Length: 563
Image (tube, rainbow, N blue to C red):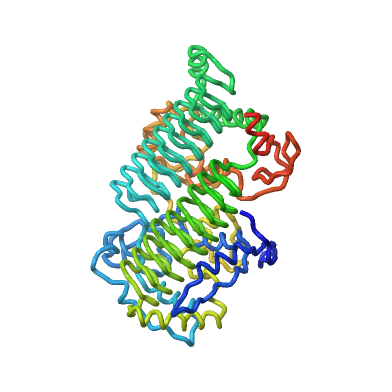
């Protein structure tokens, strides 16, 4: 996008960021209007990273806990740890007619800060135990829609007999998959789509029977390959006959844990010598950052599909006029919000909202519109602090509250992280901006010290004591816990998982599922752009490969000519 810089600011973290004419156009466009008066939203005071870090603190994906339903007393699985003094209802009870979130509505008090009043309400209204919709035999999942016989999947939909996936769509009979779609019989894959029977692959599409491959398109029966298109029977990008390939493939021992680790290094050592594209931007025009597909006129987008006229957005797709947001799906005209899913329009400073319109400062809202400072409402309109008003009453009162928030300097800020029902180390923030316990407290975030009880098992075995081969793993392992080789955190193997490893001749993992997730995240470049030179033509480029890294990095033109 062609933008004119109008102002340079310094964030509280001392990072410098710019305000442009396009920013002001967007703020003008999204500022709410009441009685023909526009209540302008000022330019933000935080840099994009700090905005995103605060948004992430409102999203717990991976931490699930056992606790009691506060309505029935039954045991439930929840994203809210039992040491937090919240009312939490089982999913069935929360969606029932046994209670009404409007019953918790209160009058706005102009002698008290708005965020303080909202926090009191937010603490009082019952919370949904987790986001797990239309699932069968799949209780241990979060942010998942349409799952069957699946365990510990995080975020997205259509999963069958799949486990430990994250940000995935349409996955069947697969394990340990991240940010992928249309996957079947696969293991340890990252950023892949339309794949069958592939293991340890990264950024591959339309492929069958690949092993340890990276950036391959429409290939089958290949190993240790990088950047191939429409090929078959290749090893390290070299053509073999079918017979030669199958002989070598039969000698690859995927049963042995040490061999697997050496094969990973073999792929890394091979790919590091070959040209890498400076940024992963495909079928897009005037877009910057990384992993952008079919998008136009968007800046600082990390992982976006069908994105138009957006800026500073982390993840997802079908977005128009979205600024300073994360985890947004199928929405338009959204500012400084997180976890906004499906058919939303004109939301400002919101979190966990779906199928809603024209709202400011709302959290956990379903199919609602024209609400302000409200929470856990569904099918509601013209509500303030969960109290029902007429349309005329609402449109008179909201401007008064906005003016009050201006006087307290709350109006142009997202909710403080202290209002989040999750503590820092439980959230996505700690994945992308990891902090120690001391750093969390120094920066005035909250630290969760609650630990889930250790699994009740016959014994806990250190990871390095596991047999190297899957054929030597006894059935009794289902009654053991394994001590993670990195974190020492114990974890269990479930029966479906063990069956998968045996079917595909794969070793038992030696790292906790959470650590394996972090390992997969590291297979993609970090969310940071660097200035460096093209290693072929020496042109200036911006890339996610840091200047000190040893990969060969080409500009777009040199890369396309070479490949």
